[in-house]
Length: 270
Image 1: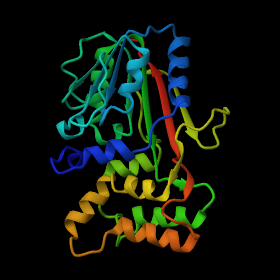
Image 2 (image 1 turned 90 degrees about the horizontal axis):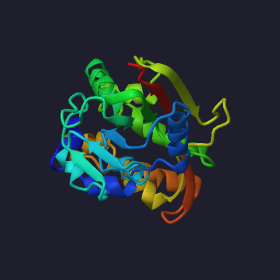
Image 3 (image 1 turned 45 degrees about the vertical axis):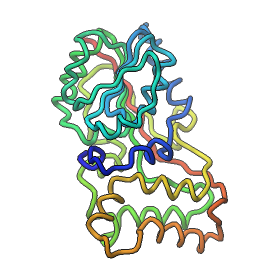
Image 4 (image 1 turned 180 degrees about the vertical axis):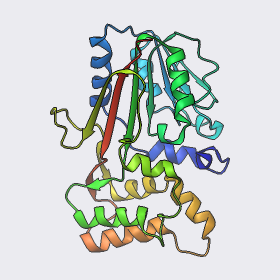
């Protein structure tokens, strides 16, 4: 998405406050890969941003690569000795050799790509029986504060707020990728919360309200809205202040937040 590539986008804020992907996510990926007798030599994370997923993959694989179209994001990326970053589009993995990748991941980014071109590249770079992983998530939910959840939903959807700002990709993510076809084999889709197979949550954090405020300011929609409406008060601050008042919270109070999530796992039989 163009906003994340902008030289004025605060990638350091993104690195500090974006939600992470917990150990349950990586365990599900590695278990699926191991069931297919996959190796742990090379991993690639597409749309890597500041390397949140790539840096963890580097702890498991001999070599990891992070690919992102935004040099701005990569400037704040986590560094590891066996982790290399490339500033390329997800549809053009030109620095990745054909048939060399054991696991390819893409987290909260596939909805921005030209998917036929992207999957063509996925099939090219994955080894036979290599694993493809896509994760996406929607608007966050406060587990104990329903009014707070409603106000966040309104922030993201109402016509006088961020509703008109989002590109189509945002709607695809909010629908948890149900419209995305994956042209690979042995496709599994897991939805959270309330996963039917009993898997634990993939994205759930305890954060202070001040931390959550800063997270909202990493949204691309927030940056675009602020640039289009410089005369308006800060829309995230307005929302957070309303939550604090209506729910009786303070900035330093810690709350439980969950992101509705989909995890797609698939195998390359080519």
